[in-house]
Amino acid sequence: MSRLRLGVNIDHVATIRNARGGSAPDPARAAEIAIAAGADGITAHLREDRRHISDADIEALAALCRRRGRPLNFEMAVTEEMQAIALRHRPHAACLVPERREEVTTEGGLDVVRGHNAIAPAVARLREAGIRVSLFIDADPAQIAASAEVGAEVIELHVGAYCDAVRERREAEVAVLLQKLADAAAQADALGLEVHAGHGIDYETVGAIAAIPQFMELNIGHFLIGEAIFTGLDAAIRRMLVLMAAARPQALWGVGG
Image (tube, rainbow, N blue to C red):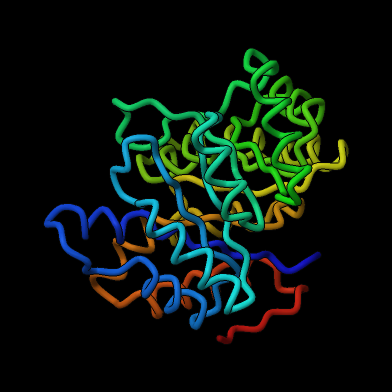
């Protein structure tokens, strides 16, 4: 079983900064700490309304990740504006996500089936520039098949429903939702897609998700930034890495800067 990578989403460092204005806390400093703690990559979502990450943050993070030899995963809506920004900064990866102004956070996966005509050319444009394209989707067979059809190299499965069921002690749903994720990961892997997972993962839910062998990367943000208030970001990330490793005891792990 291969080693599972951790991408740390630093969006909500910017949320705290923007609540008061000014420059602190600095998302780039959080990214530096995350990399030193063992994060395999940094994720940042530049929203249309710039509610947290800013254009200047993306510029700083892109430069930092190049200097530190870590990939930047640029989460973005399927818009001309965001494609232009991605093409200017050339991150390692671009994860296409649905985006609505009124949502507090991303509430579901991208509808690749209905959005085929807009998504396929965006995927092609980004891939031609050497950017690895991921699609953030629900664990739905039709969406997985459509993701392969539009030319994505990676999918990131929305695991929020499972995580919510665990935290809310909805025991009857937990096993069903976990099996749905496992089936979706197996389907995607069979289609040649690399499989990631994200949204809502915490210390309680990470073990079962990490144990699904087709998952190659977990992207975790809100929980780690929240936990950092109490324990520090370095400690929060290192504990998450330990829990991920425990779910894959056969894999080789190393934590370092």
